[in-house]
Image (cartoon, helix red, strand yellow):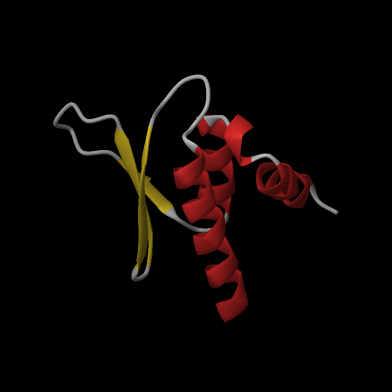
Length: 81
């Protein structure tokens, strides 16, 4: 099992304790492009083809709803391959 797979399992098992950097690493390595508008927002937008998710930068942990949505998006993306 690779480090990325272990990190994904950790995130799935405990979505309340996920740091922004961990979710960012998984999404960017899965091929999602990260961008942030230059207008002072805290939201980062990850896009891959027609799939898109917006995640607000929050310390120390991201809200559980955003983590669950990101995991669902990653699973849908991996099923298509």
